[in-house]
Image 1: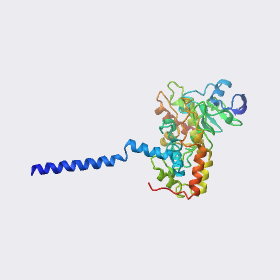
Image 2: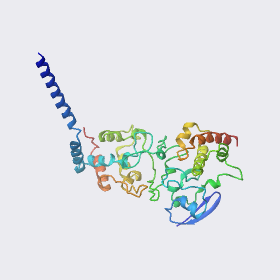
Image 3: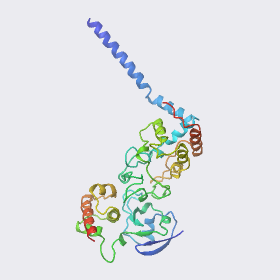
Image 4: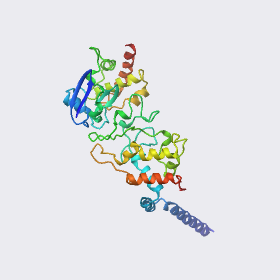
Length: 203
Length: 154
């Protein structure tokens, strides 16, 4: 009897261990890197567009909290403690333009572009999947009532968005990383995706 | 590039590269040394001035954007020999320790009172984001509330 119980427990441990190993497989570095590599090689317009929109040059202006984040590691600092405010431009006495002007500043390393601002809370992207971001972006209830055409205009013409390909240098004089897709390819991908119905894949 | 603006009530013209930080022009070309260079990357607020009444960190403000604007530095905050309410409160509360960052804090506070004449502690926490390495934040908070009282009585 004792032998049977030991055998059953051993079998159970083996089965559970196997199941755990299988569940971990999808999240292992190799598989994740392979999947990301496939997306990077992809010519699918949605893949190309989302490689840009999930890059820190875009996500840093769509932070999960109420305050801006910066840098390739999306960190925050006391100086960046200015809350988003009602219109995304900060507060009455201190706002984005206290530090940011309409162009990058090579002396201070402070980035700049016209209409420098945070996206509204309804358009928080940080921590979301690309499907969640795309769904949110195309939802008029959350995107400021924009039509697909207006979203296309924002994504492909707004100077603040296109700043991502002219991000200037940081305070150490080091050039900021640009999104992983060239600007013209990104613009073409956005137009193709929206012109073809803005289909969001099931993932 | 020639740029003209009004600073502390006087019209001035300077001839420098338009991308030059306004702080450099104020200190080196106009010889107004009250505004301080701290971090040089708009993080500490020591260089805070007012441009058309709004607080701006002048180390990151290109001179060309000052064209035609009305600029106030710490030297121009008092009027007619009378201390500004913030300066008076700062003196009453003996706020400064080393004092280096104080012109920036005073200018940021004056800008705050222009927008929110009676700020709460939360307003102060949200709007005054300058850095003081001596840690005089506690005295500054008291002085900001005192400045609001003086401001209201004037």
